[in-house]
Image 1: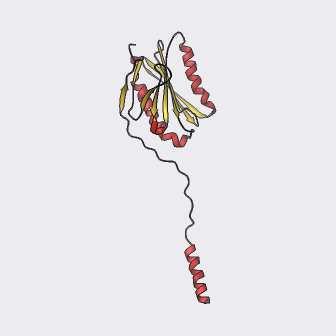
Image 2: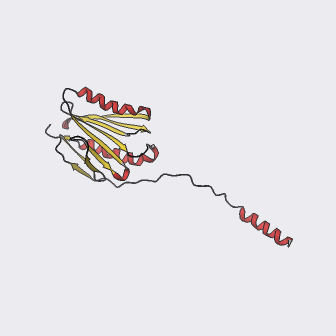
Image 3: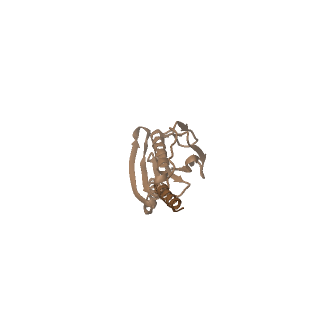
Length: 186
């Protein structure tokens, strides 16, 4: 009987001496999106551009204001248009104010100026790093008649690491929008 107890005790010791199980750390989904195919956005406004077929466009509050919706990413780009009426400097100040209001949460703001003189397209592209509510913003103007702004927003709490794939995808789409942006009758 003592031999049986010792045998069971030794067997239990040998079986229990295995690897300690460690819980897996919490991980985020790896998000991959399709390669974009671009289509031209035609409207009754003073401008046109190309946008991804992964997105849809809907009207916003005022004429020539639009939402470029990315429903699978819970994101939208809010596009506004203003005719310039001796208030060009005011539009620039307002666009920059919208960017720099995010300095409280943004860890850095990268500004890139762009110009396409042949199309009379000029502006700034802003990339806000960190837990900013709007990661990407830009304004486009011809500096005499037209002024367009765009702001990217997600319908979720800002988490830079988990939003990074979506931000990068939309960043490429926004850059394509800028590259293909044209004024009508300018």
